[in-house]
Amino acid sequence: MLPSRVLRRHRRLLKVTINTMELFFRLGEEIEALWLKQDYNEDHLPAIAAEALKGADLPSKLTPWDVVEWALKQRELPPQRDLHGNFADPPITLFSGPRFHIDLYFWFEGTTAIHQHGFCGAFQVLAGSSIHSWYEFETHDVVNTFAEIGELRLKVCELLEVGAVQEIWAGKPYIHSLFHLDHPSATIVVRTDRSPLHLPQFAYEKPSLAIDPFFEQPTSTKKLQILAAAIRAKHPDADRMAIEMIETSDLQTTFTILSRLRHLVGANQLEQMFRIEGAVSRFQAFLDSAISRHGKRGEIFGPIFERLDTVDELVKRRNFVTDPEHRFFFALLMNVDDRERILALVKQRFPEADPKEKILDWVFDLAETRVVGFETSNALGIPNFGDAEIAVLEGILNGSTEDEIAESYSKEHPGINIREAIEKVRGSAIFRPLL
Image (cartoon, rainbow, N blue to C red; front, side, top):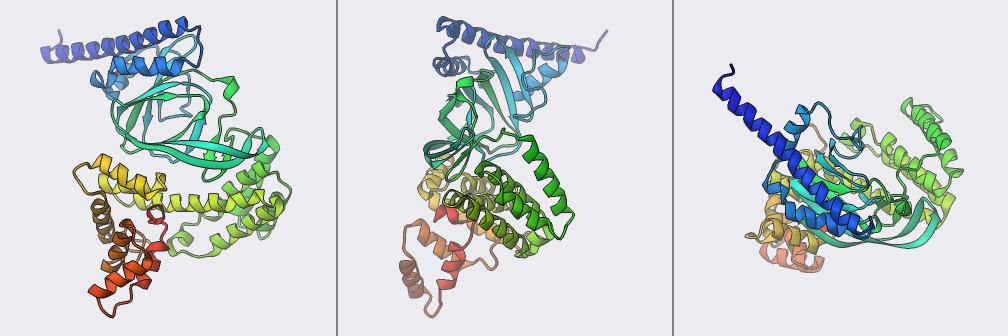
């Protein structure tokens, strides 16, 4: 006979298992019945799923770990729609209907990827929080079925916390990014498998490119693998071969080549640590070749890769810190390009604080946070960041011009030239979103 303590635990786990199954089954059956009444019209599913999620209020009834415990105890799970975990880490299918399914997605890393969906439905935050950015894309030039050039504009930027619900629309009406702030975050997702009329499922590169990340041409893919081997082997003609490949490639393939080359020539950690310019000049040669090959269309590549460099720098800096507030600050800088929106999100997260003062406090803390083994000794990556630089940043946050900042500082500190501090702040990738 089992001890009473073991029996109580077994009964509790059994109750969790039964409740978990019932909650998701009821949710799925409710959505199924309501959507069937609409003859499975996909225009109605996002609203139906969103209202059902709000009504079910699952975040008040279970945690992601209840689902984990339930899943691990099942001899046979429902049919899993993403068996190999290509999306989320991991995805778990909890209800499988004839035309839609319900998944739980775990997220351990934030990502700045901007994308649209080839499916529709709705999602709800079960655990953690996210920066949610919603964009619109105005197409100026259709390159082909799989690539477009245009203007990407931010419409909405908000914090999503536990219980928040969002409708998912297939295609361009819902271009967004979710940067998960907590480790892990979890979302409940009601979704169709795919909406064929809304393919390809574009990803977007700020400020101007829409591209199908799933497109693959076997010969180009294999050539790029071969080129990568030559570069990794430091073959003396590798750069020439890369340029020759760019000179004979279409725009879409050129972007794929440049994206891979950027990682290959920037992969030397020693160069990154001591800021050796070799990787920069090598990649610039590839970029120049692409612009020469594609003319005005090729001019989009420079701003795209400049932004990616900024994001990479912010990601690196964020990895140096563990304080949740500092990581939140870096997440804002990675995802939001507008000072006023950043200030609004700080206010949303910390309603009792002055957002400008909060940012200045964070910057001061990061300037004092030492990082051993890299080219600079603080988490900002800016050497000798002190009172003058803080004063410059404060002036910028308050909307002052450079002349006004210099004049104000010189009154309080006669004989001190603040222009160097202004250049240091304005030249830093860290502060670019605040400028």
